[in-house]
Length: 319
Image 1 (cartoon, one colour):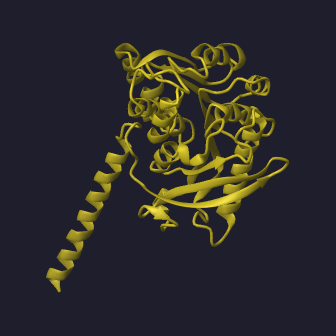
Image 2 (cartoon, helix red, strand yellow):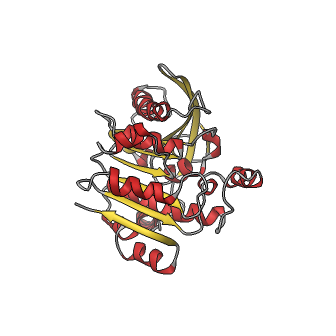
């Protein structure tokens, strides 16, 4: 009996040590590296009048990878983040973003709008705002895979191109629930610019220096002229990055062969690595309030990227 008790105590101590090591490892991860969680997922549709049905994939921290895999309760309560691709794109062409964020314990919803060839950024903005409502309903639904996983009060948004413009527009919409957002090479249509002036929450803008579809100058103008200096904001230009470098590598290579964008100066994986470092740190710092991510945004890590040429430009405002 004494031996069994000692073995049990040793097992408990060993388990606590392993959990402690795992926790320390997760906290010390560089945000460009995958997070500690597996990824569960399921697909759904949601209606946003007057635009129609939006197709979406919801991803959540799980105990294993796969469709409707058991949720990992240790990640709860989770902030929710809505993600969108751009003009003519689909949610399955930009999976690297929600998958990376979900590995850090976020519940993500990545959507495809019903009118993919539309130039109406308000459609994308409506998709973002509708996506938050969907996540909240799924969180409250007893047999949902994410039942009571979300904290229900903390929301982020990230989008590319038209999705980036829609992200900015949704963030600046009156009554928006968004607490922090990231726009990748955002489209700068009038409705986007108007909404940008109203933003009061942290917003980060990213662009590649040789983007052939949305110029760095236009994105910088959004940062300097339209986003208020009374809010936290950041602008970064990824050296050698282009527009297609923000989508999944397979689809980026196809688009590049068609001559849709300027030839890149870096690989898609290099652009992804830099981009995800900054958007993950942005959400970790502003949604989870983890101070250790400050260095990746405003401190030594960020300055090192600028000095080594990974970034051509880095500007930020902390009122």
